[in-house]
Image 1 (tube, one colour):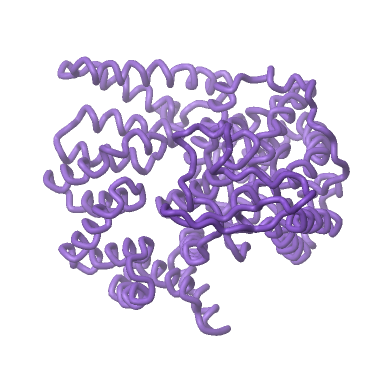
Image 2 (spheres, rainbow, N blue to C red):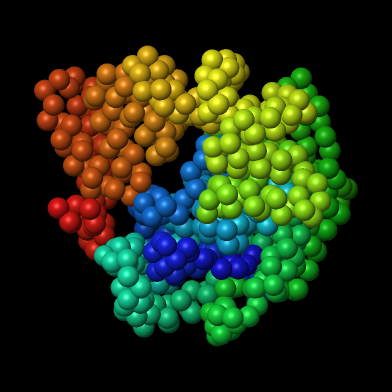
Length: 557
């Protein structure tokens, strides 16, 4: 699948996307398939890095991307992306592999997999898709890159070239962050270009041998998960159309071998042929049970074995198995909400998003999803009453919808109707007490009231989700503020440190924890928690220092 481009706003560090592309090109949505090879059973890739180290480097990359504001943080979008990705991962060849899915705010069409099962997707790819199945096709391709160890093999090859491709993105961040001037970016690029040029070409060549395998396994994973296997070919065609539109200018001046993996007609045909063979050899059956309905594909007489459903995967831990009815089919309504919410959140300003919807309306009537997007944009533009009217009309058509209900509660709060907002949110919490989007949205509104009572209520809402949301910086910031307002400075300090760590400020997190440890009112359990986090974060800070990555704010003191 093609990387159309990885673009960065000129107001942010321009070198970072290039560095990320260099480090992740082995697994970026990809090159045209030239051949199909058997898995490299004898590869030594598994000895390059332990699973724990792979996870650590993936976590460091995500933290640095957050630090430079490349990651789009929104609880509703994150829930949707995580649910889609988890559904695919549970149906993959390695369901025991941990995955982390995150959304980038960039509007270019791109996605990538990196070490430790960390998979990033640009908002632009979702905006280009016409269904959740097409988004799932891209994610399934990236999941296959992880399960087949393509990422790790790329690291092994880079090390043979004696180029630190694994942490090139972190080193580039450190160099680029020393100055915001273009000359600094250009100098850093010049330093890296000589050694990385050869490595980049070898990575592209190496990737091409794995793309067909990732396509094949991705289509199988789509079918196992209940998604439409033909979605991969349709997404390829959509990307090819965008690629043709983008031809010209700077992109056209690049040498062919460094162009960002165009999709070919052959690759589209191969994807469609695989999907057709799968449809021909299996039939789709819907089974109804007391717990709900589920969709599965079963083999016709004489056909190969049908794809294994996630529900029956013997490798899937019992705690992670999906309940009956959780597999099969997609929710086009929820996909529409997610795509339009992303359109607003990825726009430079709410006003820009509003102009986009006004242009759509001039071309024809808006869909319900686009009406939701416009209402959300108006809400972000402080037009709460206008947003509330549109959301109220949509709720009449989609009663009880979580996305609309949360939007309506926020509109009520912004319009001064706090009691109405609380009633709506309390009802949602009663319905879904462990839904991170519901809980975090309610807590955020409570924290704006800046009172001890609202702080205690927010803390009570957030506390049950501490374990499950421990790696969410927005959750940690909310819990820190709630603990402050509730008069719990120790818990607040721990959460602020965790938020700093997850946001790419590992050194600051370590300083905060060591300062917190000096308090004389710590009980045994708090001290044990703090000691454990210091022990876990210290090696990562040392590794970042070894790579030349230091906190720029601390260096200025």
